Length: 396
Image (cartoon, rainbow, N blue to C red; front, top):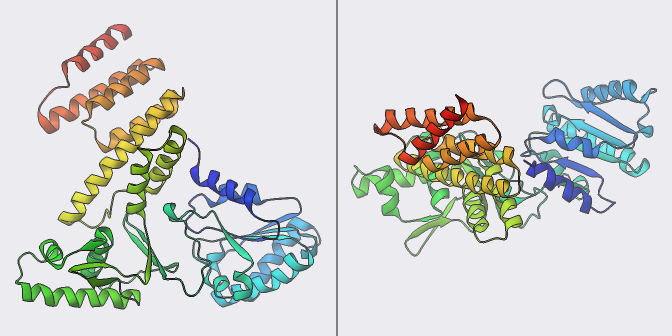
């Protein structure tokens, strides 16, 4: 299946004006190094920084050593394309000064390009007006949580919420790592996930056994802790509802995921396929996997089911296009989300059979049979049993 991130990055690179020559590969782009091949051009040099909290002297030393190995005489003036990898190992202010020096040579004297690869938002560059105005993030796609951090100062604060997996939160590109307890973090994710909710609903979820007065006190204390952690108010209260504050620009993976899947249902085939691929790429693990509360368990199951259906839909499209191996892979991934689904096992068995893999088809049936016996104490549907028997006869 196509790497949707790489396809997006290549498309955006092709549309950039020629005067954009300072690239930052987006920190949330998981396969950053796949993109390097598109950026390595003639007269290129590659520097991979080693160490932690590197200062300016260490940066210049490692740069020079790499240039000596790759350019011969180590002359930066001969380099037209410079790739700096693992820049998150560098001390922030030292990096800003270092890039300033390189820009003067690489961009102004050499008419070259600089590519920065980092797993953290390079605030040293974004806080430097001269540098910020000359750089671009690649790729950028908000509904895939690839936000553009080059922003005007009068824009609302950018809050990125990653709920698939263990849960991560970023404010203006900085990760929030300290939550002052489990409760503020749990309430934060609940408020973000709901978007708009009443106080009574919050109390039923978090403090059903407390009196209204007791729950009110705990709620306001917890909400205040969230504001202290973020440095801004997460919600505003209006007309009986708590809503995400208008001072916040929210980018939330579960919200994007759901909308992409919904939009795919009414889109034309090619566009539908692209939307589903973007949705599936967002799903990087079960919803808040380390937070086991009744509301997270319910939401986790709902999103898992949507993910499974998205995989099936994409698998059917792949099959219609004649891509049987791709369709099989997508169906197998979907079966992991719901191992009791008989119609899906039927499709998997049929595909295995078309590919001449009868033993694998029978193994899929046996897994289903064991799952249904263990969980529900029932057997697969009669027609599926008959199909399995016919395959056994063929393989005998």
